[in-house]
Image 1 (spheres, rainbow, N blue to C red):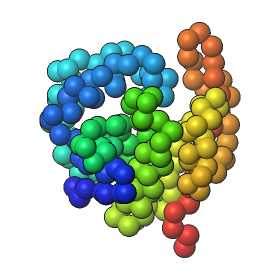
Image 2 (cartoon, one colour; image 1 turned 90 degrees about the vertical axis):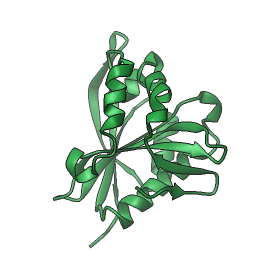
Image 3 (spheres, rainbow, N blue to C red; image 1 turned 30 degrees about the vertical axis):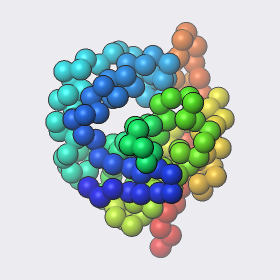
Length: 176
C-alpha cells in the first residue's frame, strides 16, 4: 500500500500498533451512531482484524486507512467499503477521532486524498456515503467535495430511542 501524502496529513495502512487507537474508536459509544455499531469490540477481535487488514481490497471489498499528521499522530480513520469492482463504485466514510482535531481541514484533506486514490488507482466511477440528516459538518464536507444528495432515507437509523433520517450522497468521479 502506498502512503498517500497531503500538505498537513497523510493516509497509511493499518499497523499492529494501531490496536489501542482502533479499540478506543470502536468502543466509543458517542460515535456508534456513525458506524452503526451497537456492541463493544474486544482487543482480541480487533487484533484479529488488524492481522487481516493487509488483504487486498479486491478480496475483502474494503480498505481502512489511518489519517495521521506529520508528527505521526493518528487523527482518525477513512474507509472505502462495499467495494464493487464490476460496477466500479464504493462507499466512503470518515472519522476524525478527537473533537479537538475536527474543523481544522484534516477531514477535507483526507477525503481529497482518498477520492484521488479511488479515481487514479481503483478506477472507480462513483462513490457514495450515508450521512445523518443532523450531521451538518459531514454534509458540508462531502458536498464541498462534489457529492450530491440523491435521497433521504426516512426513519432509517434507530438511535437513543428515536428514529433518524439519513441522506444518501453520491459523487460521479469518471464521466464516460
